[in-house]
Length: 270
Image (tube, one colour):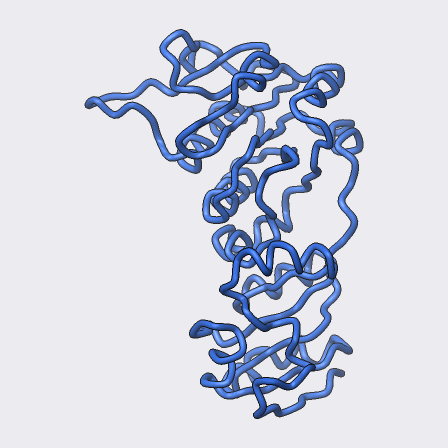
């Protein structure tokens, strides 16, 4: 059973994991280096635990202590009970869900390990918006994608905003980082995957004609919002595919486009 410790000093060193959560650059550097990430809200905290992540501590406002009582009773990590005002001073924002947990990261698997058993893979290049990362992981989990591969410059899926937007789906879909981009795409192809690059280019094959659901192994490549996939990534692809647009719209947000492509790749296979 965890100890419940009431804290009324925002500078208490025991709250260090929760300081400056709105400072994106600081948290981007600090969290991976220290091997932690922040789970926000009851559902996300429970999903992180269910996925096997070890809890370092919890930060709760008083009314959430009873809600999280079963978790408190099960884990040895300390629980810090604070007022909503103090939580806001420490984190830098109003914690309206009332519950935060500092979780221990797990070592990432190698890409080759994930590819061994996967059939439907997402490959992201330079997707740096945490909202998009979270949305893509949520769609990947919901629509049955097996794994996610990230280019070296993709944003952190375990950043608080990504985890929150995904509703904890980042814990459900295994992911790995490719070390050399776009060179490592060759290893994806060698593992038996057809590389399909999602692009609005007119010369791309409409996704329904490409019929990705009929392929034994498929890797769907997604680029950053706005710029899309780089020239190097497009050259590395086996085929370009596009989602046909109507009413003069040229493209979808990458999160929405990903969901359409995932459905096209998994329909009839789930």
